[in-house]
Image (cartoon, rainbow, N blue to C red; front, side, top):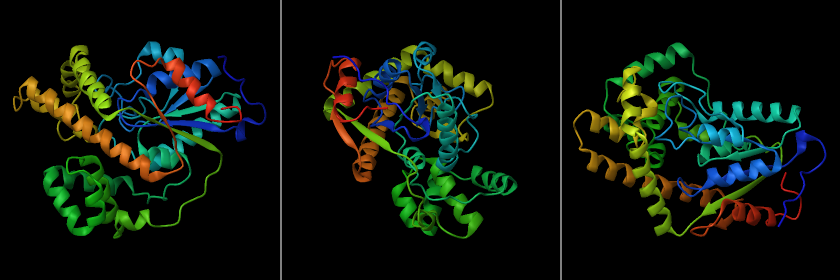
Length: 321
C-alpha cells in the first residue's frame, strides 16, 4: 500500500500526529519510518533524551536514525539542569512554529505524559521560580537522601507524594521546590484551569502483549550494557556528574552509578535496571490510559515498522499530516 500525500493548506493549522506509549514498545523505529515517508521532522517528547551526554541509557536515536529523520528537543540541556514540562512545552511549540515556517510537517514521538500534555496545550501554568532561589533550594535538598525528601513531600503535599515514585528524585525536588518557593502545593497548581488546545493533535498509542513488552525491555537493557552503558556513566562522572545529579537519578544511571561505586555487582545492576524499566513502562501505560483521547494500536511481535505505519495511516479518514 502506498502512503497518502501530505495534507495541503496552511502549515500553522496542519494536524500533528503524536505517537505515545511505554518505553521499549517500538515508537522510535515507527516514528522514523513515518517521518521519512511524509517528509516530516520529529519533535521528541522524551524526558531523558532532553539531556546531553546520556545516549545509551536513554535509548537516544543514533546519528544514522537522526539523519534519516531530523529530531528536535534532543540534547538540549546538561544533566544537572532541572528541566520542567512547562519548559518543554514552550520549546516544543517554538519547534512547531519553526517547522511551520518551513512548511515541514511535524511528528511528536515520546513517552513522557507530562511533556505530551504540555505540548497539547493542557498543562497547568507552573510558577516561574527565580534562579537564585532555585539554586538555594537545590543546595538545601542536596544534603538530604531521596527517601527523606519523599517523606517531607508526603507531609506537605500528600497527593504529589502518592503520584511521584519514591526514587524519582528530580520530580520529588520539583514538587518540594514549588511548595517551598510559593507556599502552595504542586497539587494545587495542577488543579488550576488550563489553557485550551491550540491545534489539532492526533494521539496514537502503541501497545504490545505485556509479556512481550517486558521481554523487549529486558533485552534492551542487556543491549545497553553491551553498547557500553558503564563506560558512558564513567564518562559522565569524569565530567563532574554523579549521584546528586538530577538526570542521573533515573533508571539505568542510578543503578550503574552504584555498580561503578562497588555497591552492586553488574548482574544485580542489570536486574535492577530491568525491574525499574518495567515499572516505568507500567506507569506510562496507566498515565496514557487515564489521559483519554488516544487511538490505540496493537503492535505484533516481528511486525515491520512500515506495516505499523500503514496501521496508523488507516486510522484516520483524512490525510495524517
